[in-house]
Image (cartoon, rainbow, N blue to C red):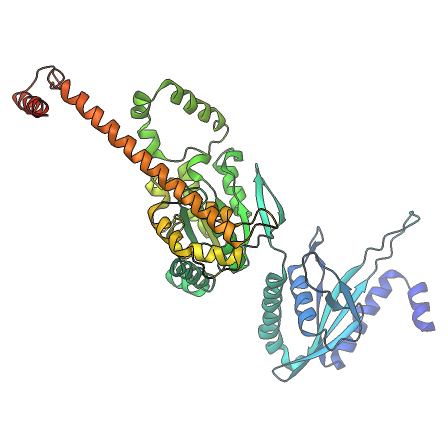
Length: 488
């Protein structure tokens, strides 16, 4: 120790460098082990190494049972403490009969500090030690296994996030939506079909590589408001443990910004564009029909259309720009992504936007059926059967009502409100809707009869050809109409 201290203090820096160099060569000549170091910070800007992070996850999951000194940390959203190896701790494990040693170390650079509370710039690293005869097995198989397992552990333990965009940047909050397929008000066979499709996709990396397609899948959710489209998206994310990127197209200026946003999305994520028919004007079909619409619309409707144009004037995102990422060359930038469009009016969307290959599966979120009602009754009231179920089944078959409206009726509004009152409230709402439907139908029939009589009385002088001259066939039809009216 005395000699080493004198060496460090009095030997010139240049001589010390050469001494270390040749000492290391001498030691490695007789030392039969190989050491590989994985530093926490790498590169010029000292970014955190992905390899270090993966090794940390692997060691925390595999070696904490044998380590004698551990560090404990509480991660937000984690159900328990996260234990990792403490500094200067060493553990051993075996791989295919090969003994391997992992050690956790740190260096503290000696830099002058003028603060009363100087910060230590600690540089941590892991050291892997093994016998040199197993070089190929460790470098070609074991390290790849450690990195792969470490990344899988990180995905399993990660905190899932809900992202939203502001111009060209994503911001996020923790995603904690409790929805799942077990509580989703939907026919059981349809739910199982969607679940199986999602699970098949999440395990299909090799299959998509085999067929030469990007590892992505598109879903179109359509149906009236209140039928559970947003709940379906949350259930998908919870089933697959994916992040959600809620893309707001109205805040994106042009196709270049849209491309930048979508490239920054990560794998194992769901990209959603809700109410795509209302966000910006993407459909060429509506542009073609604009003149027809303007000629037949009233002045108030024209004003409304102009206001919508003004509100959407800031965005220059085009249909081709969106399609280029969904199904073009940019769709291969990243993998394991699900793209979801939602709309209340599927007929308004351009066929090029929702064709198979872009939106691979179309899922109709329809009105509440009796099977979905029973699921809601089980969720909200812990009820499997009741004497009013028969009446409710009949009413659901006669009148359309959304699952959201049914759930609102079944939710108790006070501590005194019980199962009976909730079910009777639903029956009351359904009977009221049925009554309105009958009244509306009767009124429509009466108006139809009145209009028919008015059209029959004025038919004789209104039939004319495009050139202003009435044809003989028109006169015959008009004459027959007058004869029928005279008989009445």
